[in-house]
Amino acid sequence: MQALKKESLTADGLLFVSNEPEPSLGHSDIKIRVAAASICGTDQSIYQITSRPGMRDEMLTHNGGNADRYQPIIVGHEFCGEVVDVGEDVDPELAAVGDYVTSEMHISCGHCQQCRSGQRHICKNIKVKGLHLDGAFAEYVVVPAENIVNLERFGGRDVIPPRLGAFLDALGNAVHTVMEGHVAGNTVAILGCGAQGLMASAVARTLGATRIYVTDYSDPGGSFDAKRLAERFQTARELGADFCFDTNEEAAPGQRRELMERARDEHGGGVDVVLEMSGAESAYNDAGSLVKNGGRILLLGIPSRPLRSFDFGKYAVWKGVTIRGVFGRRMFETWHAMLDLLASEKTGLKARLDRIIRPEAVPLSDFERGFELVRSHEAVKLLLEPGR
Ligand SMILES: [Zn+2]
Ligand SMILES: [Zn+2]
Image (cartoon, rainbow, N blue to C red; front, side):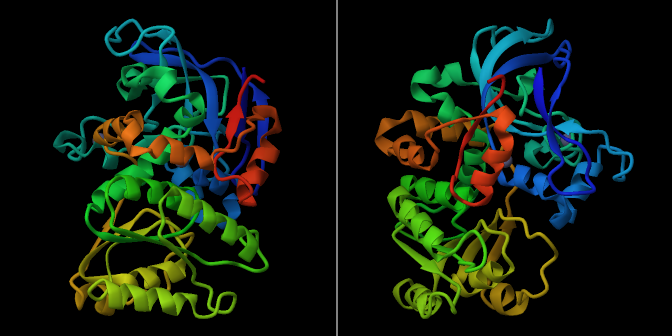
């Protein structure tokens, strides 16, 4: 089968389409033919591995320990497809050949303290398919049956078409973060206008946030220039944001100040909830400035290096703020909540999300173009189709 692998962790790029044997099926596994997959920020980090030492170390934790001993793995973890084989120990209630499914790609151990206390998503021994183990940018993928999310139970392709089914993993991150923020009846600031920030805008609107501010930082020399950011902000407004601000004070004089003043003056000293989805150092200080006393900051973005400055005294202690990290999706509460939200026509969530999916899919063999479209922010979410 055709599969996209990361050859080595010593340089950027180094992804290659390789001819691989189909993965073998264990007794408790399910084998899926991948219909569509989607490129995520994590995949971009793997692509540009030299600027993401944390990601490289993470990949090596279960694969050789150092870059010399790394064994190339198939990347990719956002996908949907059709069941083609079921291990002999799998309960037939879970899935049958022909079912339309996706999978949670975080594999928890089942026996650590976190797993045994209802927190499998932060399992101490977690392994991620597409990061530590072979993933889904391939014609076939095998997953443990207990990780399967059977989309037939949520209306099948009619309700969750593959163009949406391909990135439920990513949407699940946004849903998890917004739900942890308890946004209903509250004011929200979403920092970062990438795929997560956009999806979170739609979900926060759906879940009853009263006011949604979205920010990002334009980089005149980079790909997210002022023009591209203006397009992103337009999309954010279509998805649910009320107001968007460019926090680069040189490129957009006065915008950051206006945001801070509005948050302070109109909402009792700041917003109730900040969702940090950029990983950019400046955004953490924005989060601390924007949040009201007693508010909440949820962290989903991952900084590329340890932060040099964040004033915990000023932004956390004096303000009595709760700061919380969010990882993955709760297994499987987040999945169920997300699929119910998508299935309910009244929420309008599905129609809104449709705006962020690039209409044309890209064949897996043309992955370079797909990665470039996402890296340059020309596409928010795009589908990769293996075997085409
Ligand atoms: Zn992802
Ligand atoms: Zn565990």
